[in-house]
Length: 374
Image (cartoon, rainbow, N blue to C red):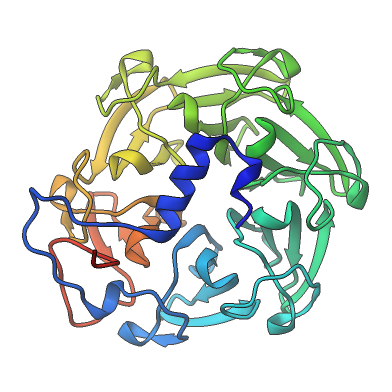
């Protein structure tokens, strides 16, 4: 895992996310259960398993698509709850294009799906953007595997540096949170890559237009019906807005914390995933706080589910639920939320009323989670 390309703080964070999660001493005694164990099995119910799932997207038919990061695969969950592997081979990292399980990924991050059923994946450790056709054929849209950089240009001539978030507009253009470059990139339908905001390679916390704005390890990116972009600016602990005119503003957050409130009164802790539902609600996986938050279009923040600082695995309503390093988040046509609960190796569902449940749940239950015993 090529952590040396990122600042020490993020490298440590990613290391912790990918390798360890322990119960806090204030929680009940830990019980390891089958439905939080890492695995790569396809199937239904408790027979299916994931390994550090991170990105998630929903199509109009109710299917979910998951970047199963620890397995280096892309998975599908049908509306009937059946899990299959769309592309990649569990445990086998690489950068090969090709059909379905013959293709290879390296710690894929964000994922998006278009109306035709094509998938778009930020293949984070390969520094590339990949496409998966409805028949499972994988191709590289932009970037060159193993070559980090910041160059704009056509398709394979462009370079990325550990891209994570990816979003799609109505015209088919892609937008990428290029995390290691602290920039937001655009890929047109013809494959032309450009930097639309941020100063590549320079971290900061400035609002402004285009390259006059600065980000600090942005991860998630989402788009609304007016083509405004919303970005989780992870190391700045803020939610940023980017208009089609290139104007960047801070919608909510100002320093680390967990407070609800309006605009800069609200606080986040390393937010990662972000989605915008059909009602204009901005949903955020506040990863470091173990929370799912809502941000209104005017910047008012409230907590939907979880309790700040309390990691674990509990289904339930609102603050009674527990998550462990939640990352990707998506919404369906009914505005239900789906969360890639990375540390728990689970996919969680949250209703509009705030009820949290686990998809593909086995028979076990747990009040806390220890992935490793020390």
